[in-house]
Length: 399
Image 1 (cartoon, rainbow, N blue to C red):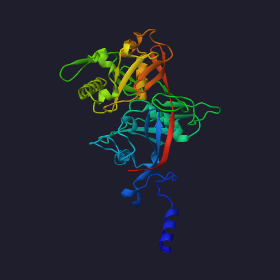
Image 2: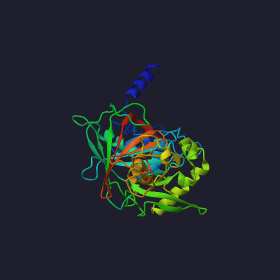
Image 3: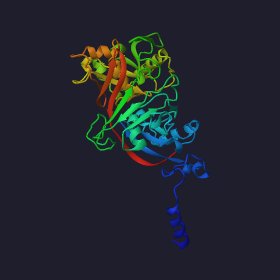
Image 4: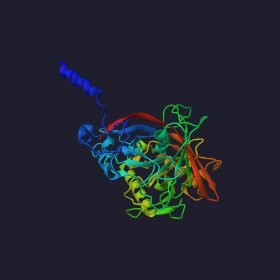
């Protein structure tokens, strides 16, 4: 190689990284460099929170929020209408791995960080900020500040009718700190990690203002074609539409065979579940066209529930059968089981021993989890869940 080329190569290797590098503390600024396709990038962490994966990004490293649709879908590999695999980005074709958390400076007293959760549509690339992801909430504290106990406020862009209800993240140790290594094992994730306790204070009515949006523990929903189905419409943490397999006309053998893979292979069942979800959304005065809220959950009779478990479920998320359970939906189900007259409460009460006072153990396709719900005079004061979280990678994401 000629000496002039060697000098040019050494100069290039010593060149400072672009303004979008993690070392930069300047806010987003469009330049000729990052406008070019090969340099369209921003610093991010790729993380696991509970049973979900996604990106964590600082708000200052993104363009203004109204420009996120030109950045975030491409980073995740969406839209992918033909294949639904997101191979050209950081997603992997599952609703539980097509998530983004954006962190910013706190805008309210008592919070350490503001965070915005974004669900990225796999096939259409739509950005949905209407709900929260409890699993990804577990990574907010560790990602925002690292060691130490933290309080995070979740900003939900679509909820403007009341104050936000922040999840509190607790870690253990003396002094209290977060460390990824630990001994807590959660179903759905291989290995052990440091436990993160998520406390949801006053979680009822997160979207509608009431734990039972219609005031009734069970509603009868009318579907296209004139058929009807009984459902419990509950709003705790995130709204859910809960139906029993028996109410869908499935016998015990058919219900026992309902795995996520079996549901994905049954187009007619998926279409019917979506009809029920949309009818439940309309009854709760929510927009049926918003896929993420509410979600629909199938509940199984006691004979199909493993020992040591109070209730078994399979959830649908963004049109897909979930391979575990969305955490805020587990919170909603755990609270629903404590509300007399709901389908969940009736199923739990029918089991030997009935309802316990301390927690509800929920079985899902990847294992089980406990939801601790504090209830006083019929009011849901708080709910707690245990998760683990880990930062998997830091670097630049190209879009």
